[in-house]
Image 1 (cartoon, rainbow, N blue to C red):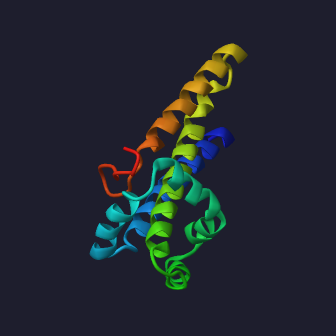
Image 2 (image 1 turned 30 degrees about the horizontal axis):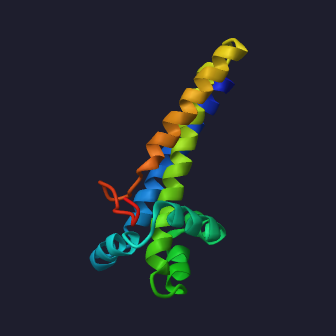
Length: 148
């Protein structure tokens, strides 16, 4: 296998592992918390939710990077709705990472194209990545944000 082929395989594996981490994090919510998440998210506009994620980004990334036992300890320190929101944010972050890595994996075909064609194709990949995230809800379907 060439060096380039090994790198491509590696990126694919990372994207796949990110999806598995998202699945693992989703399991941190029990049935009641899952139901509560629908209610909580109905109080947030989509813009407000994105703002919450930005404000809590560092803690969310620490949660995403943590092993299951360490993640549970981090969640246990949070109060009120925060553990539920943090699980949702960490799921989205893991799915974001998977989408980014998958797009990076697909971007390998850009090498050898003209710069103009590569710019157009890279933009198409970026739009596809953003669309894959736009309505991301980790349990199927979509939440009802307050502004929808």
